[in-house]
Image (cartoon, rainbow, N blue to C red; front, side):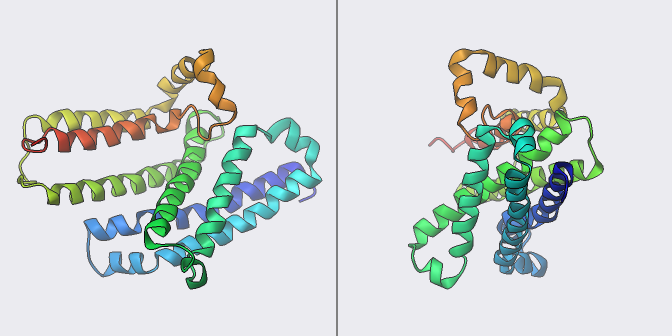
Length: 257
């Protein structure tokens, strides 16, 4: 704690302690939808506990962040501070605080069921994006990549894919089509999904041109200072996978009737 490097290491360590709880909370309902059973029921029943554990670990991280800002201010301003990152962090902690308070009965009573669901769904996606994008950059922008970075990156993507798969299954159940049949047009959707996974596995080969295209254009570069996650390069593979799942549904005969 006497050096900025030591405090930064503790910030990183606290995140690594927190992220598994976030992923569990993020994926619990989807696992139960896809694989109903005692284990998935246990995950769903304890989703709030996972979320509160994540909040506790992030509160621990906040102590180190404030320590870095106030005690090692020069290092922070010269080597860490980026306005957009501050905005992302403030929004993330804002969501986390409100979600934590409304996880208890006294807080939940202050919101309608619809508003509570909207808050927690928006918040959990924002927090997932924050955590997962950190590991995307670790893999594809920094040289000191560790095994745990790969682990958290792919676990985070897997958690999102479980949510996409659960959504897809629910949409299929609403359809009158036989979900077990693979239509010729389905291969378009599968091809898009596969291309998304290929992009997720090879970010170092395409992310630099993508950043250059989005940030070298004055009209497109302006939001970089203020808009969280902009220019959304880590999420391009995710958007591709989502588009593929959507195409699988839309290209099935009868979906547009």
